[in-house]
Length: 447
Image (cartoon, rainbow, N blue to C red; front, top):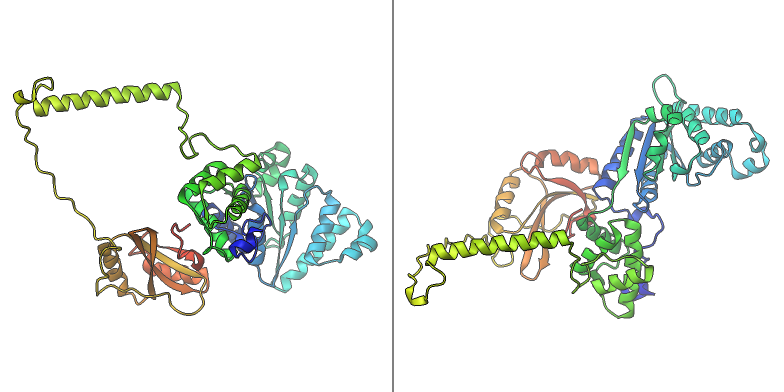
């Protein structure tokens, strides 16, 4: 097993929806914040969609972990339920009844009206306790119209000033088509927030894999080459589930070869085992397929370039067909001196720059001010921030031999809210500053 060979504490690319492995890409982070804010504001009805394998269930489980003890939650994973079965599962998940009571008690034969009344009484009891209830239904594109209509009715359970039940329905992209049908128009009009998960970009694929390796505690013993990431993104289309499957097989291949460097050859072997198609031109040494129209455009462009070069030669040295003795000596202007920024890898740190290690103590979030490739840029940023009295520290990130970037950060902070408050001081000076998790501070590419 490759987990033992690479020293992983657990499989890094398991398909189980473990919240610890959630990589918060741009679309994942936006969706999580939108759903969370809608629930906190008690807006009632939220829809989350995403293509197959984009991490919807993992995001749902991550959301559940963020609630405190005053919030009762119910996660329904089986969409193939009748109305009565759904109501019983909701009561069971909220802890209103036990499973034994549902099997043998009075509620086992209760009508829909009795089940809804029981749920309503429970939700009303939470008002005096300043509690709340959240219902999340996964794979909602498979729900029957009758169940969806019942969900609309449940969303109407409310007092004069607030909703008693916040409902989040999660499904694939065709869930939006289901909700847009005429028979579900009333339900569709009650949706307050609609958010969607997208596939990962090339940079996000690299950050996603690095994040999962770090969580599995094996990131220092195995690494993927840049070309391996290029091919992985091309094969998977940025879909996390496919990335997991390919990476799992690629690590098996790397373990068999007794290597800690995963190359594009390992990715090709993994894709072959899974029967995945490899895009043409993505394998080393293979020429990309060119269409006839593309070939004609290339030929025309080459002719234009050659004609331009010939005209330039005639202008500079006269008739290109004359002998060398007949041509006048060319007089070309001297090249302008090239301005080279001092490299962080080549020059010492200026004495007036602040270069600090991360501050001691726990912290979950930091403010990323910027990443600089020259000492001059870094010194300017450092001087601008030094007067603010914020805990500044830096990290040197080597991208390649002789290529070092200096990352300036502010922190650390226990909560994102604290970091965002501090970022209000940084933002007027550095418009691109943003809050990131501490786990990303060493990444070559910050997600």
